[in-house]
Image (cartoon, rainbow, N blue to C red; front, side, top):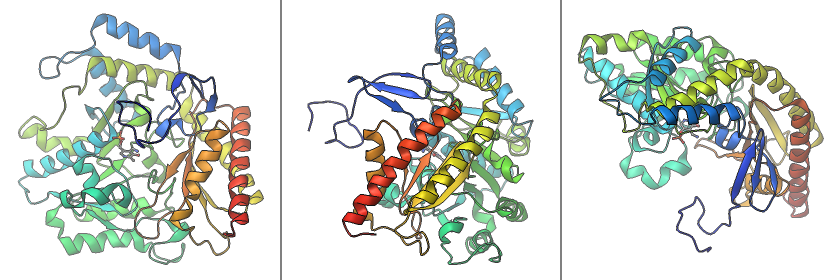
Length: 449
Ligand code: PMP
């Protein structure tokens, strides 16, 4: 183990030390260059080292970095809330600012519970979520997360919220096939609601495209429309966890727009500050706010740094940059290009079973046989091998680990900064292909293919 005081994800691993970043590239202190093929944790949407953001940081720091939200509001925080309402075209006119995606989903829980309390329906205080999901690492958010690897250690402290199957058509947990299945995964929501009793359920939470637990698992057409219909039927709030999919990543301003449904509450994070500062938000519709505005007129949530002017100014500069460079459209158009390249690549390889996702949130799933699919034994560490090969060649990728029900055994997310050019996409795909090919041949030599 290295002589260090910093607790890192893997304590006996020798991490490179990051030195700087520019555009889609990161550089370490040994002078090695990395293509950021996953925007870190699907975060650095506008790329690294953008001078306009540094300017905005400096300008705000020269005015005031911190003022406590219980004592002051601030121009950047007010303006950011206004801009997010504008980005959502009025669907979510209210913003509550927090510091991480976990806090954003957990605040969504609190606001949903409070909404029902203000309406005199105190028993509506539980949530339903899907097995293949990740909503954050804090206890409330983790309670809603089906990601078994992340839950396992803390199960005694958690509520058992995940109860329905994900719309994971590549390897349907219900052993059905789409189309023709009647979307039983969506119907499971209704079954689950009726089992628990709608009078106990405050909300249903889902990632529009499943990220960390699935690798850009994308539902079939009509799925979210059906989910929303069921939620409305039983007076259950639909919470979209757009921490990964929000603010342009999928080629739309919000991932839920792909299915033309309007969630009641939305959690944002990651791309909101594009990694320039810790910042996240819970966006709330007028309908959800109304009883709170009429009732207690305050929301029992928040943190010391909530809505701090420094972070708000950074996020405003990120939104400005996104608009100036038309990056939502870039994610759509260049995302199509990247998807096409990955699909072509998959045909040349033997172990890429599925290529999926939307915009610049794309995923690959590795299988021993593309016809019969199957899952590699976890002990082979196929995802880790691909990530390591790519890393050695200077390409960063994001692992997606499975949930419980036969979920993606081995998958990665490819999600570069939205500013990536076509030429850079070609280099990314070329390194990726070489990395996967090497792992494939290694597996063959070991007798696993
Ligand atoms: N929700 C989703 C969909 C996420 O992808 C993540 C982070 N991977 C979170 C919530 C938690 O965000 P954070 O790590 O910022 O707490």
